[in-house]
Image (cartoon, rainbow, N blue to C red; front, side):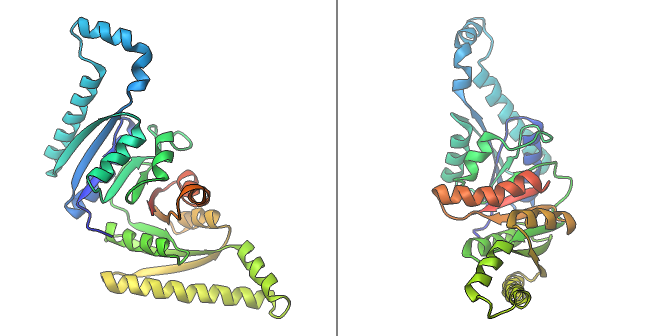
Amino acid sequence: MKPIRRVLVATDFSAGSDAAVERAVRISRAHGACIDLVHAFDISAWQALRAVFDLGRLSGRPSPEAGLRERLEARAAALAAREGLVVESHFGVGAAAAVIEARARAMNAGLLVIARRSEPAAPGVSSTLLRILRSAPCPLLVTRAGAAADYARVLTAVDLREVSRQAAADALELFPTAAHRLLYVVDPQWESEVQRGHGDDVPLGELIASLHARAQLQLEALAGELAAARGVTVDVAVVEAIPALGIVQHAATWPADCVVVGRHGQGLVADALLGSTALDAIHHSGRDVLVVS
């Protein structure tokens, strides 16, 4: 992972985005990074009321754009004064996902932070987040609640493909003070496919034990590599479950503050995999979720 020099955080001035900003502050402070505070003004939302705003301008009242821009600049200045960090503000016009993604690419952001919902207690995820999830140009941290403390336990789901290895490495780089665990979930459906391939030559129990043992060894090897490179301890766990369910359950029982998942591929394949891993973690784990592609 490239050094974190710029953390981009999206705000709509809601309670949810306030929590995202506080998490971005903690990460920026830990890495000595600049904060890029971004607000998108979607002018299409105001088009039906354009005549009203025109009348407002004639009467001397400021435009909606001007008021929001001033609010964003004031928030950036207050954060910089409070935290002693470099905080830049960017006011973009257009659909929120497009504005946020374009800014992240233009500024080569090392991390993008966005709230799951404007209202933290509301179910589901925002449409803006759904769009960003599919094309984020850098690791994306989805927050649920306020940043009362740095993450104490970070759980990374690993299937030993390159993107999940990268996700594990990024998690250690981003959250160096946390305890880290790598989780490998063995899918029972996959075990059944392997059993059919072997026929009756190997008893099912013996085959499953062999698969689990192999996964454990591979996971321990990866944990050893990561630990040696960063001088930290990384432990591992292998569980048998439907992958998304296994991640959510283990995040609760360990318990983790943040769940890390990799995003595979692009297009329709990415959408399918995203739905079975990252979205389930975001929907059901009750934790912040870091998505790495």
